[in-house]
Image (cartoon, rainbow, N blue to C red):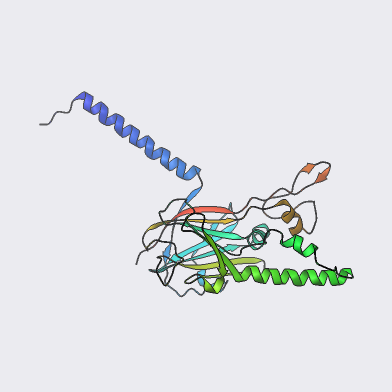
Length: 277
């Protein structure tokens, strides 16, 4: 018969209690820091990256707080992500400010590898339009010129993407078709924005831009829009300073006039369990 001393029992109990509190603290931090735990499903159908949600029926999760739906699929070689937003402010953020998808191949919250698309309106772009040499003779022609320049600028922004990492402080901008292995598309239709992307899991000579992980592993995934500047909010409202519908609400008064509140940028971070075959 084995006899356990009271001192050993006390040490064992104290350590068990300490372990319990450590686990509780880690769980609390995980929830409190806003980290989601999600599962990616194994791809059981063809996914065409065309900016349509037809391929994602039955695989979307709705996030009420963020006003978006998210779908995650993977196979042995790629991860597929779909983001759907019907909220006007989020649509404006994605198309105007730009949208970045981040990956942490270690399953944490480090921004190790990122893809920015659309790249958004670039600094000085609006000022450049105002400084058109020679001017435009009348308002109608000015409006036509502005619309054409906006169209050209938007086409350029949608033709390029920016890749960050995996080395620190390294980024490169390139045409979308030259990002080997990355297929990406964003479309606006019937008041709904659909963002689709297909990204290689493992880096190789064929796929130099990849997450850096394998099917069956944990991976950290972040989705965020860029910081919103106040002048961009005013422009999206057509110069109005009154109330604003959608996420964010209307601003309070300051200096005797109504000013819009700055809507919060979209920011989601999740630890995703990739499926294995």
